[in-house]
Image 1 (tube, rainbow, N blue to C red):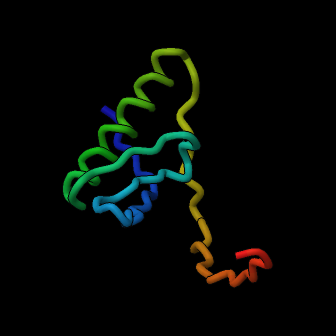
Image 2 (cartoon, rainbow, N blue to C red):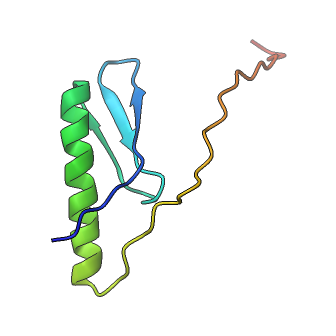
Image 3 (tube, rainbow, N blue to C red):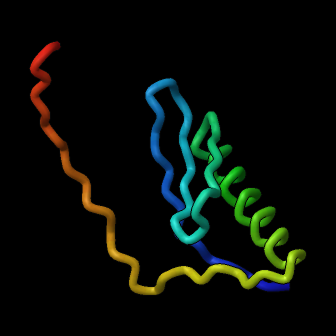
Length: 82
């Protein structure tokens, strides 16, 4: 058995629930109605993706050890015809 660790982001959605993004696994996105469900879904998504890679003989992606924190900013734009 191999243990994997990946950074996961839980983004609250306006309609409720959370969208889950795993930066080291581009294209792997899932969601959950509650944070607990989103965590379970994240684990399931990582496991399924990585097992698929191994089955296909592909290498497992590595988590970047010195990952920088995301920058969060507000962008203000003026719409001329609104």
